[in-house]
Image 1: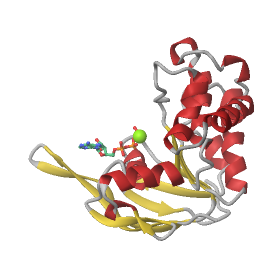
Image 2 (image 1 turned 120 degrees about the vertical axis):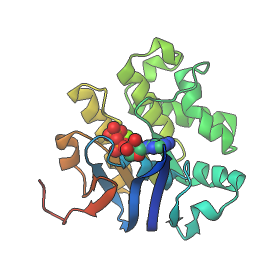
Image 3 (image 1 turned 90 degrees about the horizontal axis):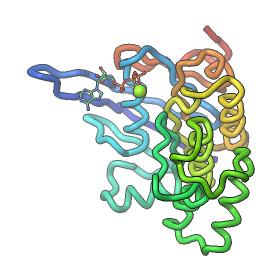
Image 4 (image 1 turned 180 degrees about the vertical axis):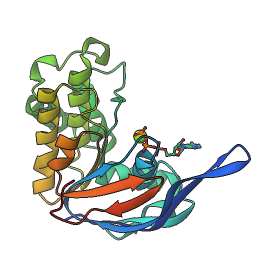
Length: 228
Ligand SMILES: Nc1ncnc2c1ncn2[C@@H]1O[C@H](COP(=O)(O)OP(=O)(O)OP(=O)(O)O)[C@@H](O)[C@H]1O
Ligand SMILES: [Mg+2]
């Protein structure tokens, strides 16, 4: 069971002569399962996710993953930690353009030192799971947007991450493909993984176990069982 806890986490950006409070101090323990993060454009959702990932440095506070203070780790240690514990899906899929779909899914396994035969088998199984076994040798430029998104999800799942962070993973997808992507996020959630999912889509948010609402940098946990 993974634990993700944030304490007085905030981010203030300089902006011209003033400042933007992209995230006001926020304390929360993410329960296992899917937490949807909803809120208007510019409210601070991606800011929160980037802090959870350790891609951005908080102005105050800390992110604690399974007892480890993420931002207290040195840069290299943080990269290793991410590799071992995190999976990511971004709105723009961030696949490596010179690697095939299969190689993209294998990539985090290579970095994690998984032997070639095993990582190839695991990557193939993951591509099958996202319905793209027949596209294994395609480059990202030879995939549709939805296919690329599913390859990115397969890659995010490759290390069996304890924390899965997704920024609008269904944003550019048609309903059916979006549903398939969601189904793939549900499996790790059921296994006690922590999935944090930014979405604009009410139908997607309705499937989540928990909801955080962000407005002008302030995050509020929605009461369990109450859906708006
Ligand atoms: N690097 C930055 N420097 C200055 N301001 C920033 C920076 N990144 C984000 N902001 C500001 O912080 C606020 C929150 O941005 P953020 O990207 O978190 O919004 P969001 O909720 O993800 O929006 P969207 O739904 O459009 O993706 C916005 O007002 C944005 O302009
Ligand atoms: Mg965003």
